[in-house]
Length: 179
Image (cartoon, rainbow, N blue to C red):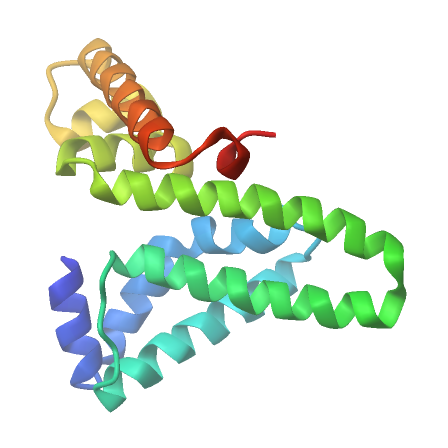
């Protein structure tokens, strides 16, 4: 299902589109929480809350997408988890604050990468997302995208990654992105 189809279905109140989104992006969205001092239950809660925000905005007609739905959901999850970590920090002290600040810097880097990936062509965006965020192997990517073999997918991934690296270097300074 394409993003515009999903948005159209959600806007009409079709919950099957929401189920589709939940399943499709579950791993990527929950990883935000799991990689930043969260539990599996917290990750599920944050993702469900993010989908609820998406649902409510789409139903109300106030949702204007300027990116892919996955990027939008990622931003919501990141913001919800930041708020939760901030709440936890206030309740537990300074040590958590230092750790979460480092985690947020890492997440900001991931956000920059996502934004740049969204600007790449469709094939590059799919290859890099499948490989780095969905964890698919080269043979799986080759099959999914109709390439001749895994070597073709690997070569294409290499070229796409170089293109992404150049885009990031052109758009952001090292202080925005590098440690």
